[in-house]
Length: 376
Ligand SMILES: *Cc1c(COP(=O)(O)O)cnc(C)c1O
Image (cartoon, rainbow, N blue to C red; front, side, top):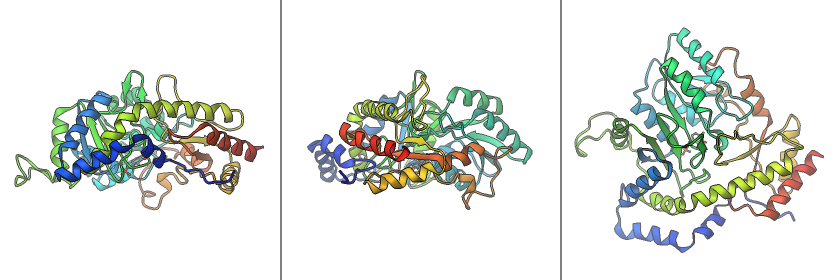
C-alpha cells in the first residue's frame, strides 16, 4: 500500500481523452499553421461560449494574461495596483513589469481571498504614499472566486479597474456568473496543472469590452495595427501555440464533467476530514474549480502531517510557504496598514492534498486515512 500517488494525474486524463487528442495534434502537424492557426480562433470562440464573456484573447501564459490585462488598462508608472499578499508571484510580478507599484492587501481566513476591508484601507494608504490607485487584482485562490460584489463596491468608490487573476478558477461560478465575466478583465492560465491546462504554457484574457479586446489582440502581437508592418503601440510576443489550442479544444469537451468530479472529490475530503482539520469553506453563492484542496492545520501539525504522508507515498504541497510581501523581490513595496496578519498565519498552516478529477475512491480513502492517522 505504499505505491506513490500522483498529486495531479495528467496521465489518467490523457487516457480519458483517448485517440482524439493525437488526431487533433496530427491535424496541426498536417496543416502547419503553428502560430495563430485555425484552432486558436476556434478555441477563443469556445472559451467565450463556455463562460459567456464577450471576448477571449489567448496568449502565451497566465503571467502574460495578467501583463496584457494591465497594458490594456494602461496601468503604468505612478499607479498603485492592489494585490493580495497570499498568491503566486506572477500576480504582483506583472504589476512591477508595468512599472506600477503593487500594494499588498490581506486575505480572509475563510476563503483565502482578498479581504475587501483591508482593500479599502490599502487604497487609502496608497493615496497617502502619493500613488494613484488604478486597479485591484483579486485572485481566485485554489479555485474559489473572490467576493467580487464586495470588491466591486470598493473598486467603484476608489475608481479602480478590476483585473481578475483567475489562473486557478476557470470553470467556477460566483452568484449567477461564470469566471471570465467577474472582472473588467480576467486573466486565465492554461499551465498543465490548472483546472483547464494544456501541455506547456498558455493563457487567455477575457473581457466584455470590445475596445479592450482590440487592444489585447494588438498587444499580444507586438502592438500590431492593420498588418505586421504597422506597429501602433508597444506590445509583446505572446501568442498561444496552435498545438496548445488543439490540446485545449479537446480538454474543454470534458471540463464540465471534470468540474463535477472535483466537486464530489472535495465533498469526500470534507466528510472525512472536517472533524479533525480546517477544511476549505466554499460560499453557498459560488462554486470552486478545486485547483487545489487545501487544509488549514495549526503549527507544528502541518509539517508533521506532510512528513507522515510523504513517508507513505502521498505528496502534499504548501501554497504558499511565504506571503509575497515577505519575498525579497517584493519586500520593499507597501502593504495595507497594520500588515497582513492573515497571510502570515496561513503561510504557516496551509497544506494541499492530491486533487484531480480522476482521483478514485480507494486512493482517496488511503489519503484520508493517512491524514487522520497523522493527526491522531
Ligand atoms: C499559475 C498562476 C499564475 C501564472 O500562470 P502561468 O501560466 O504559470 O504564467 C498567476 N496567478 C496565479 C494565482 C497562478 O496560480
